[in-house]
Image (cartoon, rainbow, N blue to C red; front, side, top):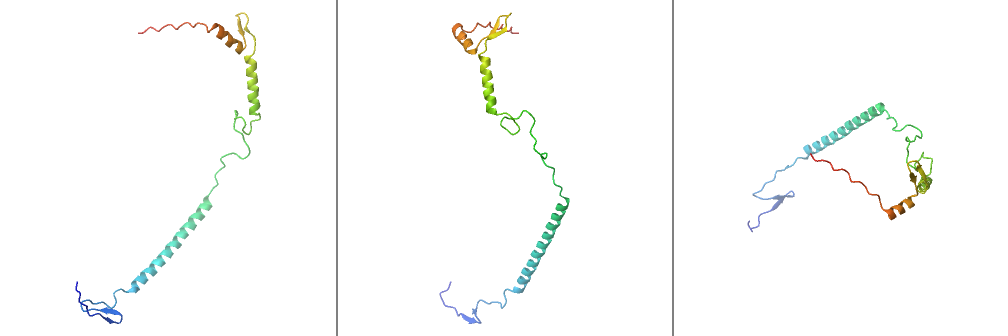
Length: 150
């Protein structure tokens, strides 16, 4: 690079140098403007074409659309029995059912009587039966016969 000053003059606002020359028209704007204009026309035409396809397909779909049948029959229908307690269609109170069940179980556990009098089989309350087991212990169980190995 040289430190000498070159003769730089101006020619209508353009730099002038003896080793460098400039063309008067490096870039022509008219082909670029024409290209952009044709590109804009192509974009607008493609939009109009796609809009026409969209409207046509939408009209076709609306003319051939058949509403699907309902997934459930119209009206209130309950599932078949047995239904879960507390759900619609179940007419009893689940809390009352529980109280009735506990009451019946307690009566059966406290019942005293003969099951088969001739065979000597009796039914006693559960509390008494547990007390007898504590006092006397469980009866001995005969061991199962061992299988013969082959």
